[in-house]
Length: 178
Image (spheres, rainbow, N blue to C red):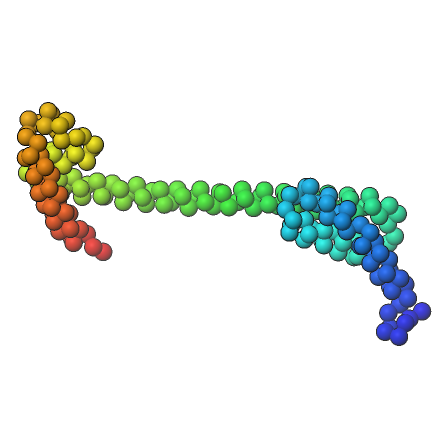
């Protein structure tokens, strides 16, 4: 038999049955999924998937509550396994990209070290020694004891050394512009 919309009566009863079961089991399935995945929105999405599978199922389901529970569990575990694989893939890609950048960074650092050493070699010895010791964390007192240079001279040597270093460093960089 067909109703006025051309839908077989059986389908209409199935839709009514589905609606009744949806209202009856939605909160149970949702809670089960929420406990498994621990996320409200995700549990709602997965609950919808479970009920779509129920709606699309062919044949009569004898123990609907148990069937929905089993489908919910499988749906959650499938999602979690998929997420685990996705995260693993992303980490693998991130590690590969990191390796590439690490190699490039290392090359860049090596070039910078060469450039700094070259510029430092262009400074007068006292300025070079004072700059290196100061930027290595030594105090003026420690530099004075190590080099015998007076504290006032250390301050001047560092100030002049910085200026000269920056000037030479900029000049050196002009030749490396690509």
